[in-house]
Length: 227
Ligand SMILES: CC(C)(COP(=O)(O)OP(=O)(O)OC[C@H]1O[C@@H](n2cnc3c(N)ncnc32)[C@H](O)[C@@H]1OP(=O)(O)O)[C@@H](O)C(=O)NCCC(=O)NCCS
Ligand SMILES: [Zn+2]
Image (cartoon, rainbow, N blue to C red; front, side, top):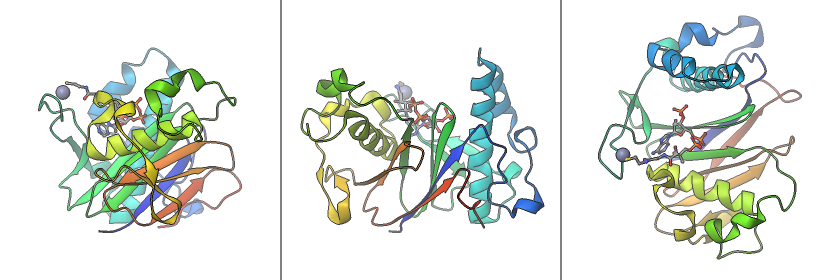
């Protein structure tokens, strides 16, 4: 199996993702499909709607930069739900060509993960004041009191997104321990890599036998992603 690529994206900036900066990149209105536009229109808050579309634009442009497929022509489907079998499980490109993606949003931040050959899950959470989530400890990581609750949260949510379970499985049911190369693992589900960005954002990426991750922080002061 292979590693994964992960991008941290600032949704409040108009980024030329996956392109040379001068070349320009199409806006969300050009690359997002009718389903994405309808979901955006259902948000009550205009900022949430714009960020939702910006995150799907980022997913499309970055996947386009990896595959060479036209961003607006990429189709997405859903795997069967792990709980009820309905069509609302993990999002997957169609045809997948065994390429796996994951998307996460938290306020102005999004994380996009792409992996060939095996599932991947990503989670991003904006910075919170130290101790702000300590009351969630019993529900999130009763097994490891040395880990900040938010960091435990992103690790476990990334793992549960890689399997498609999502939060239908309680985080407290996962027992993470040390993995190789500074990663964490629950053994059965896979390896988790996490990091804090220069802006204090926490993100984690996970998947079965995920042994390498290439992170790109697409925020001011770091280079725009190149194809
Ligand atoms: C997956 C889940 C943890 C994401 O939580 P969230 O607060 O929306 O967090 P994020 O921003 O990190 O992730 C959102 C993205 O996760 C992806 N996603 C949705 N369901 C997913 C699943 N089962 N597995 C992996 N990824 C999933 C989507 O790309 C979604 O983005 P979109 O809403 O723009 O399409 C949460 O939606 C969940 O638990 N879903 C499963 C619920 C379920 O199956 N209930 C039972 C129904 S019978
Ligand atoms: Zn379901």
